[in-house]
Each structure stands twice: as structure tokens, then as C-alpha cells.
Image (cartoon, rainbow, N blue to C red; front, top):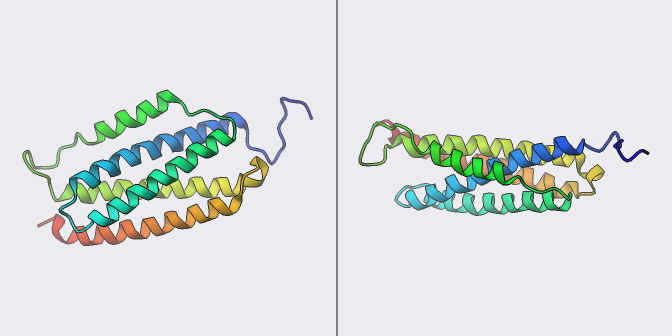
Length: 168
């Protein structure tokens, strides 16, 4: 096989790099958001779930970094800077309150976290499909996808608890 021709089962390297970098960008933003939430929401009933989720998402991000490196790819510093900048800009939103936290803020942030976990679940699913061709263990990604499903369930439960007081 020609060096420029890839196996039909092997994802195109350039597309795989972009896909993994985009997910790393999202994971980086998610870790930053959850860190801020953990530090700001210690007085809320969801504090323990946020702290646990931060630890797991941090671990998941490191797993993604390890996968990227194992494939001989390098994360884009520009995209990681974009993630940091985007997360900071995301904090600058009007919430109807000037001096104190709106009860809507944690609710909306949990919704953002839920969307991020959904994306991460898709990443693990995609890597499961291509794991053998990439020389990776598909069981690892199936386990991570299952953990993402549990994380989504936890976020939904926390969201339900906060919704009761968010509008009153």
C-alpha cells in the first residue's frame, strides 16, 4: 500500500486530528467551567455532584490527551487558547442580577455541562468504532461512554433539584 493511501478502516489522519482537537477544546472549556462552578456553588445542594463531575471530566480530558499522544498527534495550542477564552466569555452574560448570583445561573450552567457530556459521549462512541483500526482498546471507550451516560443522569437529577427554586 502506498504511504499516502490509508486503509479503508483507518480514519483519515487529518480529519481524526481535527475531531480529537475539537473535543479536547470542548473538554478544556468544560474543566474550566466546572472548576468555576465547584468554587462558586459550595452553598448549593449540587455542590457534591459538581465536585465529582469535575474530577471525572478532568480524568476524561486526560484520557483524551493520552489518546491523542498515543496516535502521534499534538494538541493545537491555538484551539486550547480558544477554549479558555470562550469559557471566560461565556461567563459574561446578563442574568438579571448585578451584585449577586441569579438562581438561573447554576441551572443554565448545568444545561451547558449536559450538552458537553453529550458531545463527549459521541467522542467515546466514535473512538469505539475506530479503536481496532487505530490500535486502541474499544472496551476502554465503551466504559467511558457508559460513564458519560451516568454523568448525564447525575446532571439531570441536579438540574431538577435546582429548577424548583430557580424561578422563585
